[in-house]
Length: 392
Image (tube, rainbow, N blue to C red; front, side):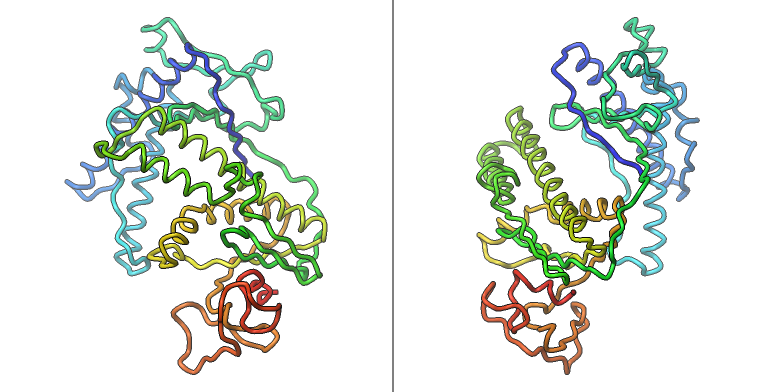
């Protein structure tokens, strides 16, 4: 399986200047590729193949200042996005998807884009990774490469790609590497853990082997400190205050700093919460996870002004995907199950649960929901805290 490790680039003015120049050239080359692909589609309704853009822009100086393999990766990424668009258009015309896809649009003027180097372009010397630059860059600035430290926990032989990621006025190294799973733990797939997500109780988990746990959404370890997962609402209020009476599209160093801080905190909280769940499964030999999930549950949700502001910004989908990724690594079966009508149905009473929008006219649950978190397991109404017990 492939994994990605992010490393924050330190405050080195000379290195930051090089990375800024490379990412700006990547941004301009990306927009040039988008322009050609859009015009070709609008005027002839023809698509582009994987290598078309490289042939068109091979002699362009934005292409030449970058290392050839890095420039090829940028244009191939543009080509892949358009090929995905062509496939979605065909699916839309056949009625397989409901929303009409939009053709890839230009990046905003003056921005920066990711630069990718395949392993073939990189060399390791004295635990330093040599990152090459283009011939034109060498002619202009007398610089043909720069060096970055190789992470001590990674093996160069397993490295597949290096990315330079600009984000909120910071830079990150992204090391994409292949991870071999030698021995997977022996788990019993008959042992099932049901997961229900919420706000204060971020994850409520109940298993059929007599274990349970709650991941506290207010815990300081699930950042921001003292606010837990609800802290994203605090971030939104800060952004709203700073942007007040400012023109559309306003951005500043302070906004970039608090946004990056919030993103790091949320990423850290997601990783910790997912690890808690996986460790619980490994400890109790649980081989199946059932995650209660309603697709589009945040669209046009009406929980009230306060509840909406707390629930909607929480990145539950990212947490779900992270748990699913770890399940693949440890050989745990991950099942995503719709949880419609679970608050008024009872497992012990033999109620079946229809999908949302497919409820039969004669369907009638055995219970009635009175209020949240007010029931006992197995007795209707089933509380939100324990309703995933229905799945197990």
